Image 1 (tube, rainbow, N blue to C red):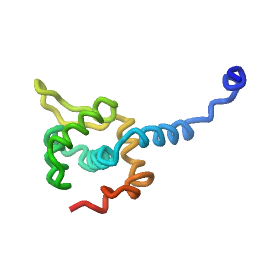
Image 2: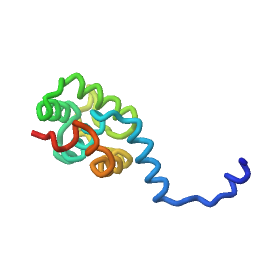
Image 3: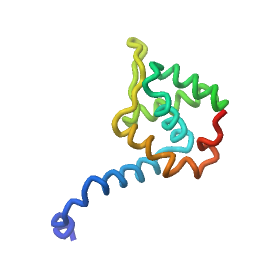
Length: 120
């Protein structure tokens, strides 16, 4: 069986992109999906991770600690980057984070009660 798998042709980039989105989406909670989508919308505005957390917490009436905890998880997964306590700099989505955030509205946010329709 292993030799048969090794002899198969690579299914190509579209397949791997689709699989990445499916697997990554299944790993994230609805709150993390919402935060990632919001981070994509606000990217390039110069916000730090703390600034982004405050914006999302206020916009969705979520506890700031919840937003910060979920941002930390997204950072640990390699989907978002930003400064730290010693170095303040704007956050950015990684290539993987941006790809996933762009796909989320089509694939998942419409299935959650925290989808984009709940924006204030």
